[in-house]
Image (tube, rainbow, N blue to C red; front, side):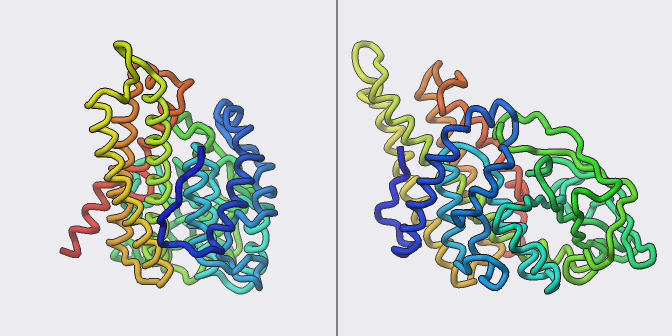
Length: 383
């Protein structure tokens, strides 16, 4: 089963040629391992260098730093194909989110040291924002990075951190100034290598979905890093985070739409095959009407995504447009998942059927990247 891309408007022939290589990689290196990764609760780290070797990591990194120097459309294709494939690899965090911070705000030394390793898959990254008791409101973080000579001493804890078990480098959001007002002016982003003394990984957290994605607690106890590990200017971390969120939220929207499409395609195949009262389930009017409604909305969703991707490629996508994309596509994803599971009947509640796994995995998309309630608040402020 492959994602139908006929009629798409966001991509060029070069983009679609790249899609073919992405599909080949997923078929050869991902699909045979999905069940094993789900069972282990983590994607094997060995997949990262393999992905790097075929250009599937951080394709937008400039050539001078080891990248391909491509546009975000290539990231979007990777996101679509991985999400349609039905697993969570953690690649989008590195390619769509983390790398942008280093490219945009890193020093020349940081770029030359880290970017080639992110592109090759030698280094896996995470970004540590969320804390116990602090979610979408990043101004409230309690992790501190206090100056001691020419070092920062970091203390605090983070939770729900994607790639937390595999990460070699963590971008830690911390307060370098706990007194300044407003509080967001005291937030900085500090690069912390995972082999620093005092850094510890906690549990690989037990989630209700996205089983293969390692999601972790992280602890920092007097972790010393040189002040040169500060990303960009001290105290500008919150501004950096806000400036990069539109792409993060667009990335989530892309994954949600592709996941919804896969659920729909699986369900159409299922109801054609499954019989009830002597005829295929698709022959019942309720089934056809439900699927017709979803097909119409999928059509609208892809058109909107192509519009949003095109705007982002022109650097025109606004923060509220990114929030709106995340809001609409993840809410729609859940509608598709729930209705498609219902059309599976009792089979939909069995983990052996793909729809059950997709339904579980979809629930978090309305939470991460900023809850959908926060998305409404962000959109509402511009009314």
